[in-house]
Image (cartoon, rainbow, N blue to C red; front, side, top):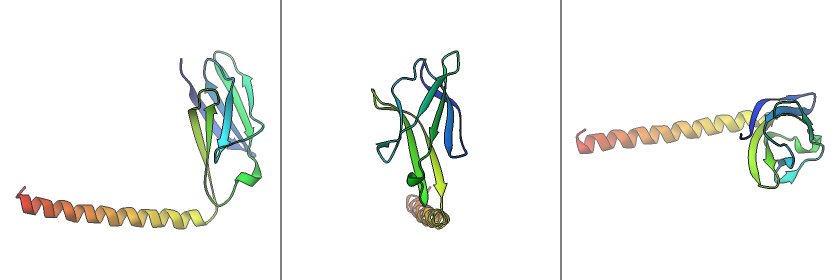
Amino acid sequence: MGHSLEMQRVRAGRWEAVLKAPDASGLQVTHLERSLPGLEVKPNGEGRWLLSLPIPPEVLFSGVQTFLLTDAPSGETLAHFTIVTGVPLEDDLRAEIDLLRAELDMLKRAFRRHCVETGT
């Protein structure tokens, strides 16, 4: 049996999850390759584990912050969660969408030109 998250959420400054796995020893949550302290792991019966981690305020700043749940001994990433904060993200998303639209328009023009040149 592998690892899978059955539920996860952030509530009152804590990340909470239910992990289905044969063993939950050696788990860690990292942010920017730094292990975060305070991960609580409690058995919940039938190969399920309740995970809870206080999110340190110092890791929250404008933009997208990604946290990884890993098996420390193997280095395998089991899951991830993200927290999005700040107004600049809205501008970042608009810029990315504009860039994607421009690239899509360029690809459409190139495809049409290819169709005309090859007669398809």
